[in-house]
Amino acid sequence: FQWEPVDCSQRHGHIVNYEYEILGQDDWAKLERQIANTSEQRVTIDGLTPYTKYVVRVKAYNSVGGGPNTENLDVMTAKANAPLPPQDLVVAQEGPDFWMVSWLPPYPPYGPHDAHKIRYQLLGTDKWVEVEKMIGDPALKCPTESPRFCFNATGLETGSQYKVQVATRIEGGSFGPWSKHVIANTLKVLPDAPGSIHLIEKTDHSLHIRWTPPNDPKGEITQYRLSIVSL
Image 1 (cartoon, rainbow, N blue to C red):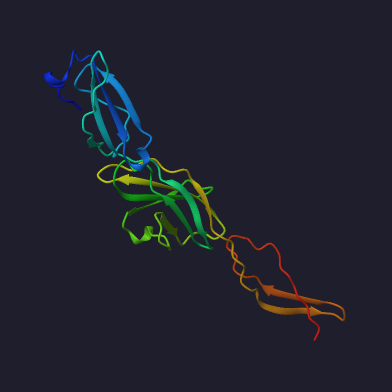
Image 2: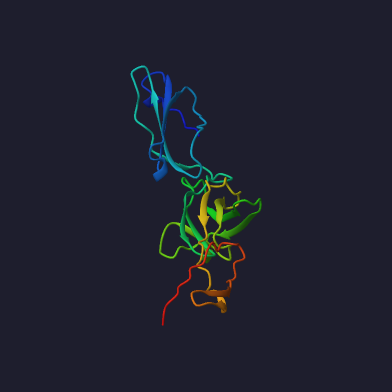
């Protein structure tokens, strides 16, 4: 930015330099403050946060000291091409064939967001499943009113573990980095009852019985419990 020189009638001597100050105004930039001196009437200020409001002011110095500041100039930096990763990704719910994850949007935002991408991978495999949802999609709403986003993955393998990550896109830009991953589990379920129980043989002190095992495609049944009741 640039400024006009002090009017000759108000200089009261030779202007030796200018001091400019820039202050962050958004919540995430309240601690941002830069003060520097220059002999020029134009400066470029680097190291600012994208998509953030600032105020800038300048004052002139002569051999005696500094004069009053200019009026505050309200400025805002442009949006970034991509945001930071989403924050605080957690597993909110787990079930036999589903899990729900929840997260907060990137902060500072670096620009307006328009979409989130969720990816998950069954542990022990190389395949990732990616799902992209726009910000207003009902699939990203949490069960209760919240500033967080939620996503429910369904139709998953029972008793398995999944690695999950999310990323956010800036409107008109790109997706940012993936978040740190979390591990979401689908729960194991109780087996169905065995069927077709039959008495095969008996003696005066023993019974030999047989039954049809329940469906167990993943081989998770480890033992059976028998109950014998005298009538």
